[in-house]
Image (cartoon, rainbow, N blue to C red):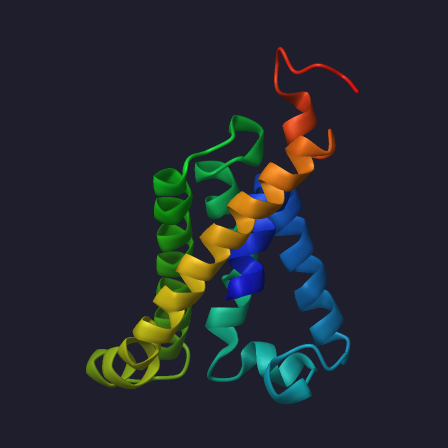
Amino acid sequence: VLAVLLSGSLLGPAGGALAQGVYLLLGAAGAPVFAEFSGGLARLVGPTGGFLMSYPVAALVVGWLADPRRRPGLGRTLAAMLAGLAVIYAGGAGWAILAMGRGPGEVLTQWVLVFVPYDLLKVALAAALSRRVLAALAAAGQGWGAEVPGRQAS
């Protein structure tokens, strides 16, 4: 989740979605990039597949709401990351209910709510990291920050 949120906030909507798409393709091809160093198509169609498949959409949403080219503030970055987290939860819960035949109550209590505290920490960490990285890139005249109008070239 941390990498999904960071990819959207640092790479923008298209770059974040593309990065997560590549991640899924690598995992589908068998690279051990998923949880517990696993890979393969079985992970994408298994019980947690909906969470994984929502990653590109979540990164796109985060990047769209907190596009690094607009230099978003902390509040906007946090809101964008919470929206991205909601996309991940919706994708995972929806998949578990519709494709895996799980009940909504079971999914909510066993697949979503148990992760909320930990994921909220990831949101806070990702927002802080994103702001620091973007500020460092801008200070170095690199990345999105270098495109800010009025900035002196070094």
